Amino acid sequence: MLEATGVTVRYGAHIALEAASLTVRPGEVTGLAGPSGCGKSTLARVMAMMLRPASGTLAVDGTPVTRWRQRAARDLRTRVALIYQQPRLAVDPRLTLAEVIGEPLAANGRPDASRVAELADETGLTGELLTRWPHEVSDGQLQRACVARALTLEPRYLICDEMTTMLDASTQAHLVGVVNTYRKRTGAGVLAISHDQVLLDRWADGVVGFPIG
Image 1 (cartoon, rainbow, N blue to C red):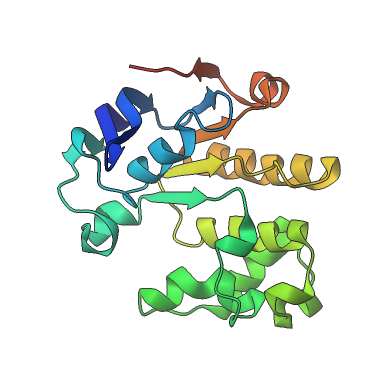
Image 2: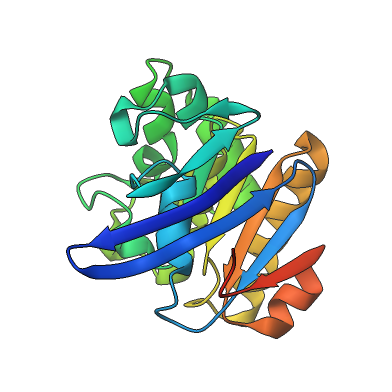
């Protein structure tokens, strides 16, 4: 399980998140609902080991997380993948889409062009799109690449932070389908974060609303 317990995040005197607890179980889709600004994305970053909380704990399959960001143990860090709401803020604009997808593989010293091509196909990216730069493709095409990138190392947990907010209905449905297929194949746990209650009701096994504790 991916377990956050009593997590509090502060930015100076401002409390962005207070004593929040949430569990994501393998094989299940946990929905997290709430209005913009309530702390959903902050919790997502903590659970992806991208942000150290002021207090509280995070455990991945029973192993406590004691270091954060690039200092986190690689074995733990690669078990959790985060897909952001805004793909243009989540990619290096100097990379082609193929390089975006293959970034985690390259970072771990095992580039694999066939794996990149496989994931591109699964997410609906044609071969000619893979040679393009982020500014040459649409938001939907770039988000497809970001979803593919998140799956490259086959994470145990996938955090989708408003993954479909900026997408048209067909792209939204396709990417939710990609995530569901991956979950069923691997038994991964999914945290689906959205302010769209209709989407969560259709997608998630259960929905938690803010505030949580």
